[in-house]
Length: 402
Image 1: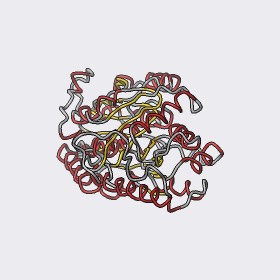
Image 2 (image 1 turned 30 degrees about the vertical axis):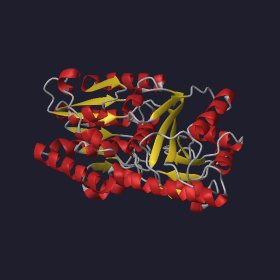
Image 3 (image 1 turned 135 degrees about the vertical axis):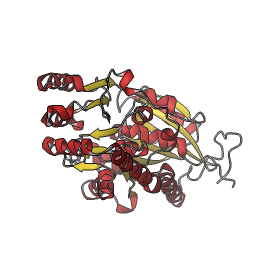
């Protein structure tokens, strides 16, 4: 039998700007088109990242209202069947539960790979029925973006270690190579600030903006007047938290140093126009944003949290500090300010080289494609009808065979 290209559907909750969503888009855009056909489904909402998907990616916005949205469960099952999907690659635990329910109800025959980006393991290590049941009944393979997640999947959930892989996120350097720098000083009225820092982070408690604000306030007044900070991220995800942040800026007397323009879909351009970057999150599984800082060639001060931060700590590509410690963060900012422009550029260049050598998206894609092949092969051994291709499914002209 002639096998068609592998058909992979990337599935997220939304196409809003976010770390997990960006990873899903980058994977969809960079999978090998000679052997894989790609589609994308946002099960709830559309968003700014839709425009970043490659033109050959079929996109569906499902509009589900809950996990048990029966019409949308049926629609999703029909969609995977009509497209002849071999592997459903889900991102986010809510999306995973929705896909797993479809599998459990017999609405989806495709293999289900769940890509876990959960960044609050320090707050919630539970493995109750909402996690255990869908992971055991509707997930064929689990990929965690850090080792702690994989340990949780095996030790707490009880998944077979053979069904679990750890894979650090990568970054699509092409997005940064073509970025036109944003004139941050002009757009945000930053005057003649010597150094402009960017922080990519939605206003949510996990990102711990207050620690950054306390650190800025801790600096000597002359020192802090040397820089401005542009924080790009949603201001409506948690309105009470955002309101508390703005009140804190006023209370500390540093509101004039910070700009918060809301969600932006031009992160590479923002970073290209900056002098350095900062990140103050309490806990992360990646974080992808550090790779984006490095891809843009920026020096940075960031909290050491997540697999990527641990991996780059010893490389001297940024200043890593303990989470939730505003005094240490203030010290890190002071060290960054004390560097000469040449020293900052050298640190940024070292980060760019490290990304090219270890985190470039094509390295990650090769690992992911290997997992896909193993997953399809395991389906063939189990006698699943769709493993390895759908001979009766629609086939795009010009596609190669595996």
